Length: 400
View 1 (cartoon, rainbow, N blue to C red):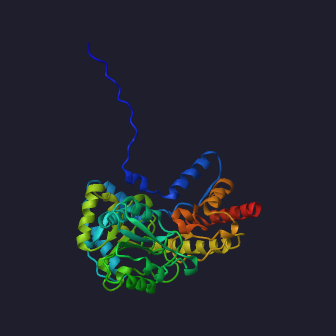
View 2: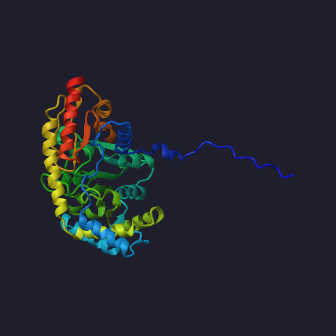
View 3: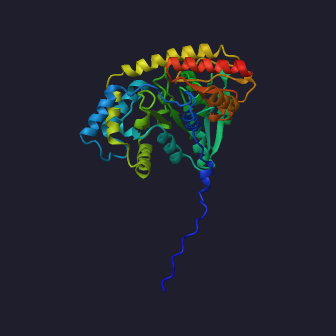
């Protein structure tokens, strides 16, 4: 008699311990909550997601569609098509004033892989990484994931959310392996000056420390000029420069970015791409070539519109009881101080979402030094920004 098969007993999922150290990005979590409220019939104004509300420029879309229709649907080289690598190299050379060649560029699907690969390639367990706080949450998430030690450099309002270089110098130890810079900065809109970068470089000196310079918002600068630490003498080979297409060209869904680094490191990034993604989508890369080499008026027009919204939003938010906001110099965020409301950042963000129908992010979504602030994305229409500010103002008058 054939025995009856016994169904396997369901076992508890046993994740690797490092998974418990992996963080998330609160913007997507708040977006999910906002969508759930909308499904219940509540009207919500979305100021939580860091995504341009503009369409991808028509010439870029046309290039992508033509690529799809003409067979650009197969594997690409892991490090990217030579023509796009060359276009990115030419762009970096012209905008940062440094020589750059195609073999120093690695094309990746979005900006995050450059962050991920930098940490994977350079950071060992027990190493120390200095990073801005408040700052993009993926920095701290990756440091913890790899078992390294996160060393936050506080970005303070009284310094216009720039580095206190003396404080930074005191954080450097023999275990410091990597320093993360982000300018223009998410979430504060702060911008590092050329002198700031010189001072940061001087503080690091000739120690064996690499720099990840996140410059994804470099084209969205409202005041002054963009500067990169890679442009300083001797620092190109010590810098991994992160840039991409999501913000400047409103291409978030295309998933296209790139890292610029020394040739020997670029080869290892290519190996990481082979093991992780195989390659970046071919038709997306063709669209990227058009973005870099085609008409740039859409970028200028979008930046001008964001500046107009910034001026309007900051002026109005500063009239709301308990709010005070410095004028951000870049990116498309406002980061008002809300300490005088008497609420924590999380309490106020939750209340504005649930009671006022305005989705924004708690400053603590960007680290411990974000307490006392909220982040609003101004990547929404002037009409919606006005409605959101009306709702916040009305809520404060009724509840504070």
